[in-house]
Image (cartoon, rainbow, N blue to C red; front, top):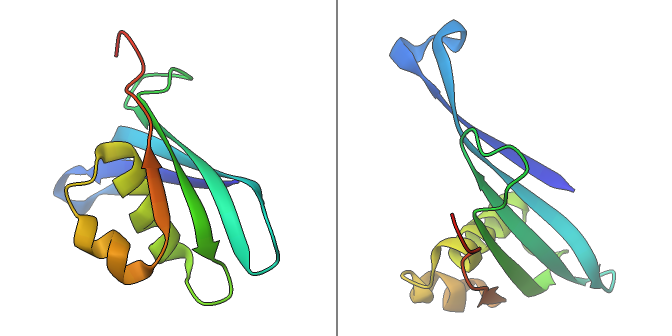
Length: 102
């Protein structure tokens, strides 16, 4: 699992940091060269309550890197406002419905 922790460091000081949220990217299958991932986005202070979920499928593991996976994961969860980025990377994202009550 890849975990991305989003923090705001006020004045650039780690001692004055504030949690903005987390992203969990979990491998759910594929082959040695292509992968599928579940993406869970959590809001700040949300504990284990998932804000948005999505999936990245057909990810080219041997060609693309961690930042490509992060970009596709964000698009899968936040929406398809940046469709050209998805097309250029050559992977498919699936946007899941928002979790109720969040």
